[in-house]
Length: 56
Picture 1 (cartoon, rainbow, N blue to C red):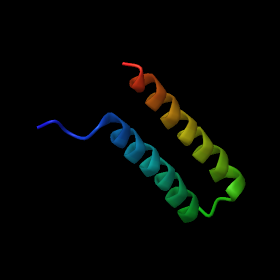
Picture 2: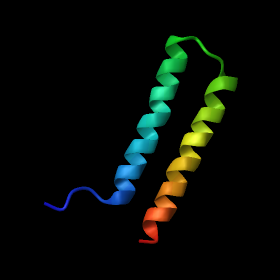
Picture 3: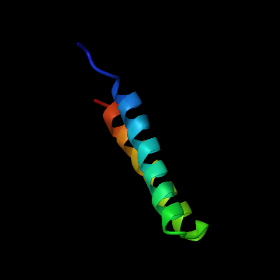
């Protein structure tokens, strides 16, 4: 069994992390000013991981 491709795993992880942040922000009634930077950091981190894994 080969498993899922690395790019798909990174995409799922990044999407899941952004959604968890959004759910926590919704439950705690936090403002967009708190959520937006965390989502951007998550997207940048996922992109950086994708770029580094793509080179191998």
